[in-house]
Length: 477
Image (cartoon, rainbow, N blue to C red):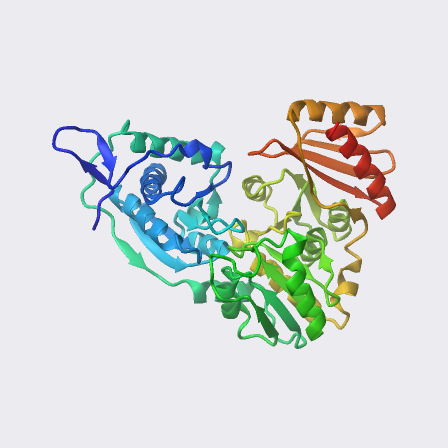
């Protein structure tokens, strides 16, 4: 087996085999994951160093093995293999799960009870790749909970400032395909047996849903029409980012053309799922959160359900009406997963179409959310547009980004404007401003760019337009 760490005959300093340039990891190790340009930032040598540092971190917490999965990008198998070499050089074993969606890797981490690493850049363009890391049981890692230590140890190794001890013997690598186990587990949670025979169009965007959807939906009463199921990390048809309306157009057209009952669009690593109705109209992720919350509350009455602070105010209203306890959270998977564990929540939803389930190790899975929607639609006779109409009570702007020279100054202007308009302000994540008429907006800074992200909700589209323009005038002044 190739070892990660080698020593010269004249120096005790370690080096990475084949290292040429020590990358500055702080430029692409983000708040919750690693995401960088392949060959410039995320190189094979960097992957090996991160693997060694990750192994060091999880070994200190009692782990002896790591499971690794990767998406369909051309660079993913090599980067995953070098990461595995880094882990085994630290004496830990590796289970290589091969091709996987991100939620399939979370399943592997939970079912096998070991830390995990998923190589994917999700919806980013083809030149990018990345790593999503978790502890055993799919517990998330962020800069605050260990990722910063892993980053710094890997950087020290690359720079020659850290001398790892020799580890004998090196860890072993085994291979295990978990696709069937993953599919069986999901369908055990939501059984589609007996639903009416729905026609479903699925746009995989040439991403990992093209691998997982046939396994999950293949033995069901559904007729599945496949769009872009060929695994292709160059994304030849459109970006695998359904948040952008342009990337939903092909799905919408196909739903209308075929007369399908529903359309599903997954992002590149298939952990998010977007829904369009029988008319080809997008269904708000807040409405999906409310729908799934009601199903989970019917199963576990009185439970806590999480929603992030840019979800529609209809979500906590509906959760309360269904007998649940709504809890508002910050945006971001590490915050929601931590809150899931702390509150014992049965379910959580984000307006970005990440959906979290207690029965799925508190992790996010777009596929399980899709199964819930299909089950709800298939066990009654109304079209999807009518089924979800009761969950969509208000008008929303969607997210609007503004480049600003001084983020703090812009936030200060917004706070002053809010107070001048007798609005309530809270600081949970950026600024959330609620006006006396019940309309509200949230402004959050980007973690990586000089951007402010604005979301607005009001009773009517007219109200949305007026409030949106007023706030943008303050932001962009």
